[in-house]
Length: 311
Image 1: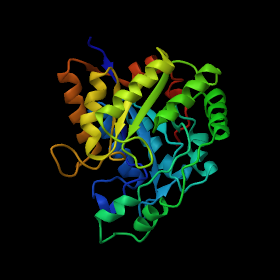
Image 2: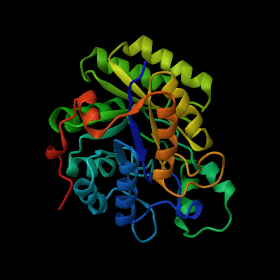
Image 3: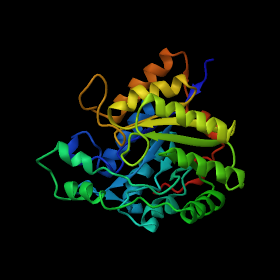
């Protein structure tokens, strides 16, 4: 049956580095422009990280976030989704600082600790624009992204119950779905849940159709009719598995945070290019792209008037 499909666009992230693509937005104005263009192309949710404007390093400075959230807020109606994941090299307090400051309608929330390995990307490049790039990638070989049960419960209470933000529950493996189901049973979280199946990050579940089917089956069994899902597949798997997610009844996430390329090959020139690509697929499958106001109703969000996007 025809339905409204949510497109999330994750415009910059903290995985890919400036050497890897000249199209990766880095500065506040670049991230703002990329977000607005993606929203105009059909993305109803914009998932946001920040970078140091001088060299593109991942940043958790709320001022770096406000350098683009204020412009996005006044230029389009998209739902702003602030990362609480940041980078595995950041402390928990650092990662949460932007969401605490901005109190957005949505935040991402990784549903567990994991090895988050992006060191393999270093093998693909020789000449680096900045020294920090290979050093950051290599550092992920010896670190763990930490979200303990205590961390998750604190985030749910502080940003959710007190701040009114809803969550994009990021599940990188089957056990993360089990954890979310535990919190649903205990009443820590309530429907409607928005679950992001994340496939293709080293340390998490691999990006293939069989794993996506398994995650969907597990979520159906554990979460019942209390959730909607979206598909995030890394790298070249982005568009194929997002398409499969739509066929299975889900929503999609695209953007240069997750993949620098676009089928049939080559670098995507913008986030909006990926949004246009998946929007065409959604509509050719007979569905409609959800608007921001649809998403606010579907996920019971608190509304843009209750966030602090900055001056």
